[in-house]
Length: 329
Image 1: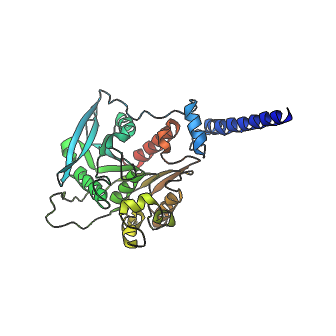
Image 2: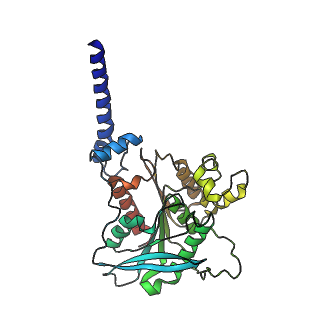
């Protein structure tokens, strides 16, 4: 009987701790609405919070409202017979050239699709911005630098087609999450890859520059111990660090940051065990050292892909909106 009582007492203590662990982040966030929302640090409590309805997930495929015009499946590049396409969304009430927000999906460079960011595309189109999303070659189609070349070509395409769709090519922001953030960072900070003469995939170069950049938990430095030993990065580069250390430097966005880099917004969960928050810490330090305007939000106790949770997504959207209003619009 004593053993049973001890077991029951232990279970009550565990249940009480679980309740505290689940409730405390919501209570703190409610009391501090201007601060980043607090998460659960451990994966299991996060799943439980979603499972019992304490946290809600975002609608990943919201409908396109009737007051937003769609331009779908626009080919910006064709390489080896593979058509790479983009979509543009334009508020119908926009009467003059609007800023353009270009979203680049993540997926470890191996999966994902350009419609993955519909939640952001629609949210900002409703706020008066033109939005766009881009496909790029995944690992099944080729290793680095293929996808980086695709995104830089897409950026050049956007620079050259503002008149056709009604956006201002001098007010373009790039936004990416995870692997998409890595590609956005490369393109915005000036990464360039030598091209083969006669390449039919070449896009005419432009004198325009990216106006602003949003990095959502993206990797920035592949020369760190984390990156050298991360299988996803080794696969992406198709070589180990010991084989080609120069390749790891070349593929690191932080190598291209300079005093003329665009204003940068960084959002990263402190419990991210896929891309450690130290990567964003490094980027923040480099931007500060060069005097590049930047805003950095460490979102406490949230893991990778944190913005799939509605509470975090709403915070992310709010901070992005403030950033765009200041640096783009």
